Amino acid sequence: MTSLADPVHRVADVPPQILPNPRKTFPMLRVAVPNKGSLSEAAAAMLAEAGYRQRRDTRELVMVDPDNDIEFFFLRPRDIAVYVGQGTLDVGITGRDLLLDAEVEAEELLPLGFAASTFRFAGPIGDFSNVAQLEGKRLATSYDGLLRGYLAERGINAKVVRLDGAVESSVRLGVADAIADVVETGTTLKAAGMEIFGEPILNSESVLIGRKGEQNPATEVLIRRLQGVLVARQYVMMDYDIRKELVEQAAALTPGLESPTVSPLRDSDWVAVRSMVPKRETNRIMDELYDLGARAILVSSIHACRI
Image (cartoon, rainbow, N blue to C red; front, side, top):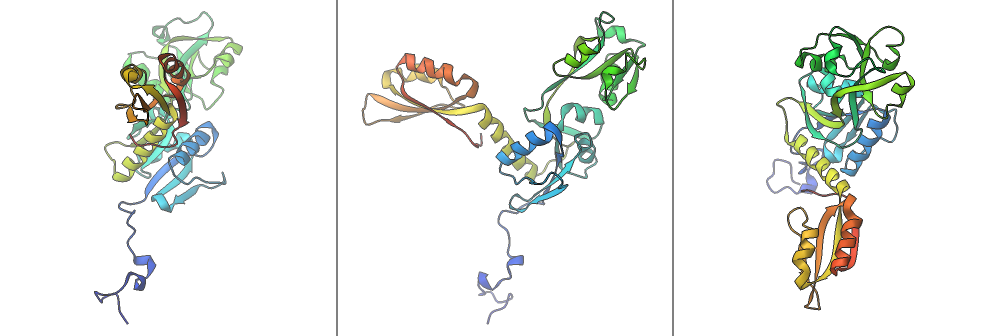
């Protein structure tokens, strides 16, 4: 009978709990994810496309994905930057506006392309036309840290009034002279008798954030996977047949990321071409290829990739 000290022991003799895991080369990554709302749904979908397990019950606050050595913590989007900035969690998904408003030691690692919004000034119709007119005025907002930083950079001295919601009502109620808020369609502002003025304070979207100056191999893997999802969402794979003498013209229409793949066919006068093309331009490119002489033009989705 062999023992663990015996150099000829078999793997089968070793208790499974002490066998090395060839995939686990770094500590488990701790990731903050929005717990509800549009940010939560889109973030969960993106992480699932990147190959990570996601919770099935929205009441779960913590979920471990042992296959990928990652642990997810479901938190309020506004709190995520605080946890990451303090080093309690490694990375998180939140809005760029919430990151800047938190004023913590965290930085943007990767824009994620969903939950886009614009942070703008608005005031009573006809009262303001530019930001300089805000000097000495009262400004209501739910993003006081972000707004103070913006005003300080431009040397504008104004009083910032922090509110947790219904910012557009503050002027009518006499709390503020103007507001700074996230604007989507502007319908709510018009209903309150207000209009947008000045340039956007910030164009925001969902972002992956990490603590400033700190990044480990596990974070790099997460970033690569999310980048793969972004590319897969933006591109499709296009295949077509074309006569040899037209390859250069066809390649100009479908240059791909590096260069298209060109393969010989049984008919030596023709070749098969494969290339990634922007999804939004798919039908235009197909039309142009057909007019050029390409045939058997096929388009397929890309589910995942590494660029």
